[in-house]
Every structure is written in C-alpha cells, then in structure tokens.
Length: 401
Ligand code: PLP
Image 1 (tube, rainbow, N blue to C red):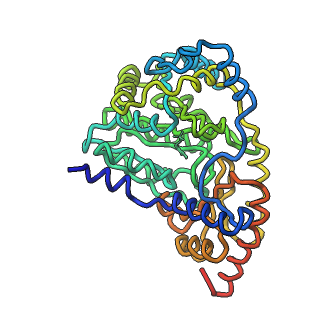
Image 2 (cartoon, rainbow, N blue to C red):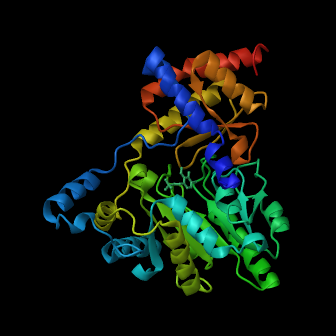
Image 3 (tube, protein in one colour):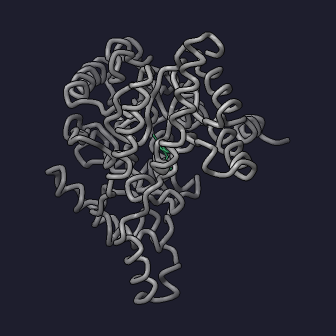
C-alpha cells in the first residue's frame, strides 16, 4: 500500500510546470526568441558578485573536509549571527542568533512553522488570496484546514472584513506574503496595523495567540521606494520565514531561515517545535558551503535595475493596449485581468496561437487573473508585445476571449 494522499500530490499536474515544459519544447522547435515564457518565478539576474567571491574564498581557505561537513541542526553560529545582525541593524531590534533557525529555503521554513502550530483537525491556518498555491498542501498535509480570505479586488491589499469573519477558535496562524506572489502588491503599514489589531482582539477573545507567519522571500524586491514594513515590529506574535532564493538569486542553493522573536508568546516552545518539525522532515543543517556564504553575505542586496526596467516596460505596454493590471510594487510578477474574465481560456489560446506562456491565477485563489513572471530578458518582453497586442485585438473583435 502506498499513501494515496502523497501519490495524488506527487502526480497532480502543475499548470506552471506544464507551461514551462511546453515552452522548452517550443524553444527547441522554433528558437528561443519566438517563445515568450512568463511562467516560472526563477530569478533572471545573477547573484551579487560578493556571493561568488565568498564561495571561492571559502573553498580556497577553509578546511577541505569541514567545508562539506554537517553543521548543527539550526545552522552555524556565524551564519545565524550574521542574519541576526542584519535584521537588528535594519529594523531596530535586538535579534539574537538563538532566535534564528536556518532552513533549506522558505518552503521548509513554512512547513516547519505550520507543523509547529497545528494539531491536526483541531487547527486552521488562514491564507490571504491571491496566495502561493503550495500553502494549501503545506497546511492540509498536516490535517489542518486551509481557510482562504477572499481577495481585496480594489487594490490587492488584505480584505480585513472577510478575514475577521473567518477567524475562529481553531485559527492558529495567518500567512502574510508581502511583497506578494502573484499580485506584486506590497501591504501597507496601515493595513498591517489593522490586521494586527484585529488579531490581538481575536487572540484575547479565544484565549490563545494567533500568529502571523510572515512569508518574505520577496522582501528585498521592491520598487519606487515603497516601504515593506517588518511585521514583528507591528505585531509581536509574528514568525518570519525568509529565503535567499529571490533576494540573492540562489533558489537552487536552498537557503533561508525561520526567525522566532523572543518577544513572541511562547517563543521558546515555538522555536523548539520548529526545530522538531524540521527534524522529522530531515530538513536540518542546510548546505554547509551556502551557510558560510550567508555568514559573509547576509547584508548583500540584489541589483534590481533589470527587474525594475522589465516591470515598467511590461506594465506600461500592457496598460497601453487596454489590459487591466495591478500596479506592481514588489516581487517580479505582474497580475493582469483576463480581458473576458476567463484566464484559463486566455492562457490556452495565448499558448497555442502565440507561444505566449502566462499562468491563470485560479490556483492562486483569484480566478479571472493571469500571473506574468517578468524575471525574463528585456528582449523577451519586447518580442512578446505583438502577441499581447494580437490577443487583445482578437478579444475586441470577438475572435478569442
Ligand atoms: N513563498 C512564496 C510566496 C514563493 O513565491 C516561494 C517560491 O516561489 C516560496 C515561498 C518558496 O521559496 P523557496 O525557494 O525559498 O523554498
């Protein structure tokens, strides 16, 4: 007997992966310049030069055995200290290394805190639409319920009224992802304060803390000087899940962390439960070499000029053609309304008629919208514009949606 739930999870189609695979095939047939692939959120800018310099330096100077050896489960002290120092400096907190648990990216960080907070069917975790689709299996595989807060269609902030109605005695946490995948929106300080006030009221009413799980892989990817408030400075009961996948363009190296502030309620228990959850997943001691890189580069930031140029070009071009787009303030996604409201149909026709690969956002909890990952070359955007124009013209003339 094999676990059916996992068979289904492992075997279920992913629209994003399918589009990406289709794009690779078409590129072989037609040439890369004729396929416009906006499917995957894979960084397209190189890691800061200090990262590669650090890798070389570490390999050249450190003990050749230890550099590939195990660290402690939570990671090397030097790496955790570097993360703590960077957070302290930026956000005016006194973060300690013992509050940091290094993880293999944001995904295991999220699973660890979800496992730490959930006790099977007794527990609910809220997510705010539109949301990263993996949240659902992360939550449901623990037997907990994934409660979806419907999107705020006005400006893709947080639908606070709906959120308040959905909080229950079973709510253990709410995942807050800002800058947001897929909308590119950044939640304002005001909306986060209102969320915090509501959660404080509800925690008091139900007699237990309701944690914010701040999923922050895109924290450094923000444009036009927009503020990304650091949620632990607004709401004490926050646990941060961070990743260097996007911020240092290191998704394949699998490195991130969980930060459990000592001022959060039951912080020691939460930290140990995160460690315990990571232990049973085997997600302890992230790759040693990359931990050492983080010790040297935790304070390095990406050069966002290429993303910013892409963001402006795509947003302005599509708006000019008549598409309705959410103004992207962060991450590297543009969220676009399907012209006739049917995103699946638009995506399929765009794929077949123009080799234009865009992801319908139904799985992100926002039907009728499309996600475009603009972490591509500027030339790809320029080459793709006639395809977007063609789709809009055909829609207007009633030929396709
Ligand atoms: N959370 C969000 C919102 C994401 O978009 C992603 C990856 O795309 C992750 C978490 C997982 O990131 P990681 O590569 O660090 O596991």
